Length: 295
Image 1: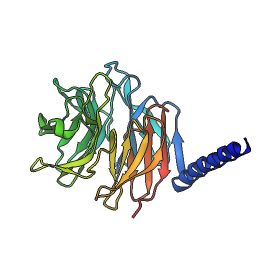
Image 2: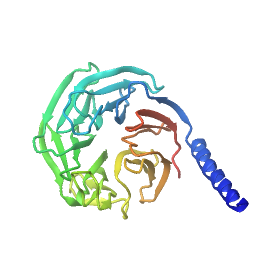
Image 3: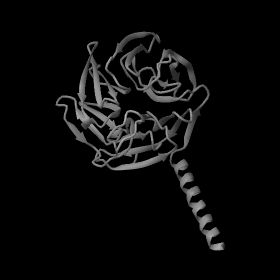
Image 4: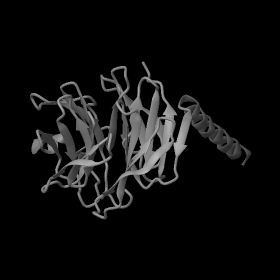
């Protein structure tokens, strides 16, 4: 009996040590919970100096008109809880010049950052489930459609299919770096009724010019969501189902740096401040951590 209790005590000590070590490695700078309603995507707009946060506020595919965007300072102060509202279930965010682009189920909305007014709206009739969004250096907007395993592009106010097919692994997260569109695959063998997959998704990029796919991680990696550069050639990603934050090097080495419950969503990372900003959809929190990239 004493031996069993000793083993249990040792196990508890190990768990406590690991939790304490994680907290020490990534200290919390601030956290917001009041007013958050299923926060999905946090995005830092460098030109304005503000964080924008999308709130699904209900089911992810329901056209209920109660989704909204918040405007927040880098110190975690909410400037405007409902900076832009009237959306359905907004998810991906990314800006180009003065326009904040928002994906919203089957619609992409452009909002002026300086005025907070809508400046563009593109309804994509055949979209299955628009999720993350990225912008290129030329202003092209890319948006992932998880259900149809497709990526749309919006250029010169025209919507077209950039790439599609099962080889895209039902993409969720998107990020443009130079002439590469990085994609976080949700997985293959996708079931649209419950969003489960037979295989986990991989991290890869598509050459924007040739549209050829290049793997970063060779093995199935996760149900990948947000993607951000770490400032040292690597990336931070989230796994929504596992609730983890991953660091992936340019050579594909994967390290889990944080672990939470299901719902770790589309993160932001500011390399110059070493600040990782993580929305958690289930907990209704937005937390800023100090995170230093590994070499």
